[in-house]
Amino acid sequence: MLLGLGVAILFSVIKTRGYSYLQTFLSFPLMMPPVVTGFLFWLIFNTDLGIANYYLSLVGLIPRSYNILANFASAFSVIVLGDVWMWTPFFIIVLYSAIQSIPLEMMESATIDGCLSKHLVKYIMIPKIKPAILVALLIRVIDAFRTYDLVFVLTGGGPGTSTQVLSLEIYFQGFRYWFMGNAFAQALILTAILILIGNVLIYLIRRGAE
Image (cartoon, rainbow, N blue to C red):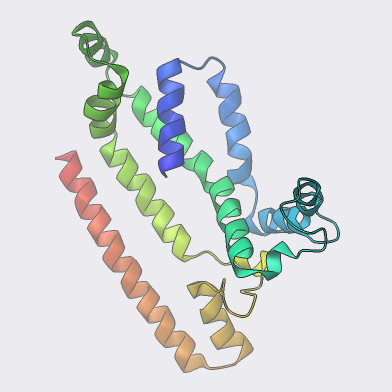
């Protein structure tokens, strides 16, 4: 979210030309199914087939035979990288559109009064787009709890259970180990957590709108 907000503000400040073409390019990660994204990153970071191992070993960061997806720290980093690649464009598009809805007269008046760019961002842009930030965050949080495909394709929850997320754990409990009671209880707890977080964010959205 922070990366998307930063890029959206940067685009707004520098008045990027051809943003419509850039927006089409940014939409590609959003249009790709998570399974496809997971397989793409698996190919990139695969020990035998991937280009990541080859170039990282060339600069001496890792041995050529090092399995990035078999080590917790590196495997988790790849999952985070894949998730950021998929979802940062969502925040860029939503927040850039929100910034463009700010009245131009307000920005011009502040600039004429000697307001610096960093103050424009802090005191005008961010407060004005706060509801949009919270709505985008609500959507992202809900989807983050549903993360399954990317982790399943990349690591299967491994090494061991070190990258196992909640949805994957529920799947394993219910359909691999056939502990349906455990899976049902975990699903209920996950639902309760999402309802709680969703209500908090919706309250903040309504408060911000008021």
